[in-house]
Image 1 (tube, rainbow, N blue to C red):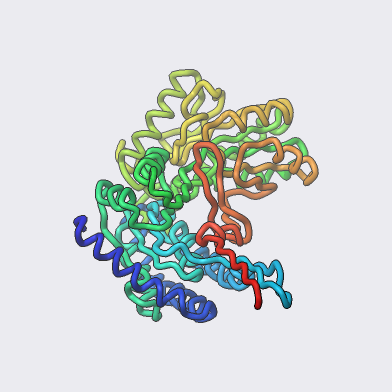
Image 2: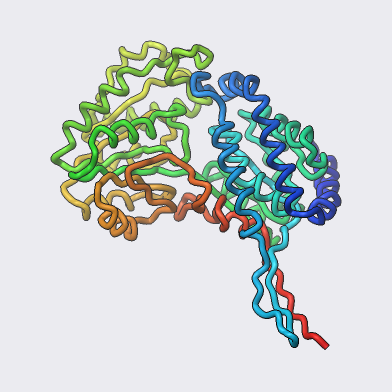
Length: 439
């Protein structure tokens, strides 16, 4: 889409937004839920589309469960989250604060969880009274089309929710012109930096989730089997292409050998192959360049002394293209890129640690801060460690889960802002105060 057509689309959204925001909240909620329900009816088409577009095996289904869970929760809390704050309502004064929609919200969505990441902003933005324009990743262009189709079929006005095919230059130019009132971007650090540069001086609100290098820490009192199963699944699921996937694991010395042995057994049993085959447990990476970056990190680590625990012969489908064999690395250090840079692939490094102090230092030794996964039977200990970690979410005895009741947020290179929860609504609206003196 060219610049002129893009401007016209945004203009139509801005006009439609006024009437949309004037509708009762309950009506907006009902229509958004209907849109998600209609999307769910398309699931049989969505699942193979995802396999074709980004490689997720069909055996795992689509993303409707997560989309529905998040939308349902945000619908349930909408009235409470958006209700006015009454400071005074006396014979002399009425003083209150309301939440007002920003206007036109641009959602720039990623390819790895193309429906769930998008719905985090789309559902609450629409419910709050904004118009939404979605620009999806080039890897998953059909997702934006399908989401808009579902919502419009369910009764959301066409100009209130629109899909746009934009290149980076047009997107940046629109942001720089102040065409949007809020921009939510999920993607790379470089992409987030581009968004911030484009928005500089426009006072446009920006929410950024830019990835992670999420750690797991297994303490001596952990349920070892549960820790191995959850952390390795968190590292390998979706071919490791998860923003909050586990990319590095620290294990207390007494459990280290057993943890590694169990982890190797799990990964050695995976089936790498065609994502359309229901027997496949791990599909191709979304793009050859992503697989090549992971290969480079692994190769560099091996040259620096890391040990590959997974025999490549178990995965002959890895031919140097998008099909990439999962790998567990031991004897790793933070001098290696694979323990510092985002890998975004089915690769995880496992390090032995002696105590909490060492683990805390290592977990914080990273440019990202999205989630951490702590494994212990002691919630007091977990909370004390969590208080010292530079992260957006602290998990105990679980990992790789987006809880719609909690703010999905990060720090450092992961970005800024927050989605979901009451805070998600606050980020998609602005406060407006009324100070009314009665005669």
